[in-house]
Image (cartoon, rainbow, N blue to C red; front, side, top):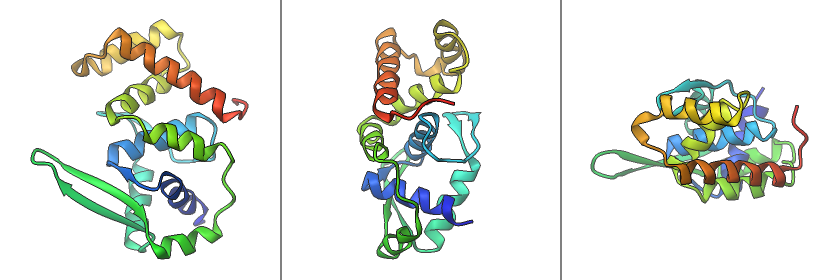
Length: 171
């Protein structure tokens, strides 16, 4: 039962730190779309794919003392930072060994901005559609963000890069 919790602690441990709730949501979603073993259900939400399950799991992990959540007041918003606690490191001993490429994938994801990950995750949410339709959908559901053609191109290139680095067959 706690294996799914352990995967989230392991994810944050491999990232060393994740800054932002939205960023964590997008990183886990993209890793899931790259066929890593995450089971959280996602729905399209205001900031792209969102999992209430993941939010609850992170809250539980913080309450259990396995994750720490620090808040930084940025004036117009609060930035959350997630780290694994010492107790969380001990809890990780119960986790399955992660796929060797997961750490590389997480490193690439954590190096990107939340805005970029929101674009990538939203494109992936519509990955059952042809590329042109994916772009059109993003322009509809994310019209306020005014993603440029260059950003779209960079996002598709990043998705290809992730797909090559995962080496996990789709399906």
